[in-house]
Structures are given as C-alpha cells and as structure tokens.
Amino acid sequence: MGAMAMAAIKPNTQLRAVRLALRMSQAELARAVRRAGEHAGEPNTCTATQVQRWEYGAVKTPQGHYLRALEMVTGQPAENLGFTQADERYGLDRGAAVPGWVTEPDPLAADGPLTGIWRSRYEYESSSRSSMLNSAHYVMVLQHGARLSVRSLPSTATGRVLMDLTVNGAVITGTWTEETDPGGYYRGSTYHGAIQMLLDPTGHRMAGKWVGFGRDFDLNTGPWSLELVTADTSPEAQAGYNRPVETDGD
Image 1 (cartoon, rainbow, N blue to C red):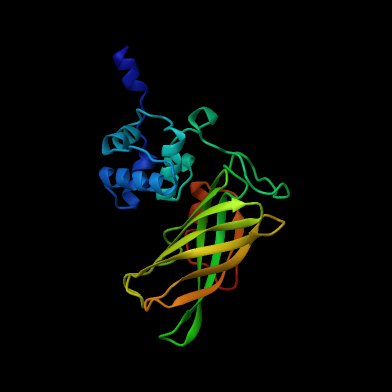
Image 2 (image 1 turned 120 degrees about the horizontal axis):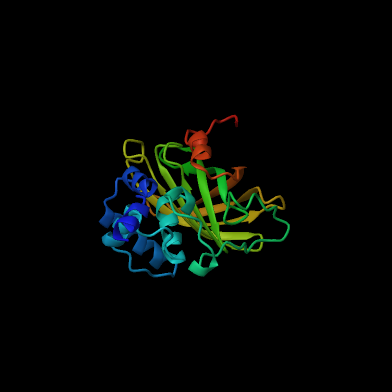
C-alpha cells in the first residue's frame, strides 16, 4: 500500500518553475504568502515545509486562503501553478461581485468575469524632465469575488506593476505599486499610491485616476486605464503577451 501511495504522488513542477522564475527559495515564498494573506485580511501560517509539500505533490489543492495568497504573490491563476481546480469546499470563491451587465467569459478560463490579460496604460509627469510620459504593460488580472489582483507579465517591461483592487458595482478602488527598472532613469525606485476607476458597460475596460507621491514627496496624479485583450490565462496566452506593448496596438 505504501509503494502504491508513493507512486500516485506526482511532483508539482509548475509551482517549482514559477518559484524559481521569481528567484525565491521555499522559505522566501512562504514568507511572501504569509504577507499576502495578512494584506488581504486572510492570515495564514505558510511555512517552507508547506511549500515543499506542495512542490512534492503531497497536496493537490491547498485551501482557498492559501491559493488566493499564492495567486497574489505569483500573479498566476491556481491552474497555472499546477493545482487541480478547487471548489467551494476549500473556501475558494469563484463568484463575481460585479454588475449584472458584465459579460461572463468562459468559466473554464476564469475565476471571475474580470479575470484575463489586460493592457495597462498610465501617464505621469516627470518634473526633472519637464514632460508628460506614459507607460504600458500587459498585466494578469485575477478575480475572486470582489477582489482583483493585478500583476504585470515579467517581460512586458523592465519595471513591474502591481495592484490590489476591490470591485463595488462599477467602481474599482485600491492601491498600486510600481517597481522601476534598476538600470533605468529612476534606478530601481519603488512607488506606491491609490487608484480609482470605473468599469464600462462592456466589462472590457476600466479607466480612472491614480494618485501618489513622487521622489520629492510632491503629490502627483494622472490617468490610468486597463483594456481586456483576452480572457484566456493559460500559459500559452501569457507567452503570447509576455512582451512589450506596441504603441500602435496589436
């Protein structure tokens, strides 16, 4: 019986590959999962041993609060992390706290109607360069209930954009973080701020304003929009958009 049980275990190579791509040890991933849980108001007790068990394949589907924290840390849906699809008995809310007029995509490809790959664009004023600049990324949006997690795809720009948002009807509110290119003009600076957007009736575009402090602690603001490019979050779809955004569209 022991040998049969051992043979049934299949290592989770997908989770391990994602962790290594993030250049994290098992202990570092566990710490990040705990921090993500605390930030979301769902504390967890993730340890390096637990991450090891996930990668070994001893756990096919972690409980919902672990999955949500893992998705926040990695920017990947649970299915791309090598886990079998969870259901309500694990506390994973696949419902959608969004307006009824939002078109529902293929339920096999998304946890919530806003899950997908979106094109992110925002404008900001560079006081040192006396000009208005803009930045664009392809981002992964993951929805669980009223929560949206937004993470830029790794090769879409030299910097990284992250958002943690809440949906309330057509109003989307939350925080953003930008980690700039270490070798670029801003030398790896990290900026934080707040954002509020409105979801349009198609459910395929959200637009609004961001606010945040600059390097000299001056308060800045500007437009920010996200436009859906595909509801497909598969590794193949990500590979297609894991590239710089073309200025004239796709």
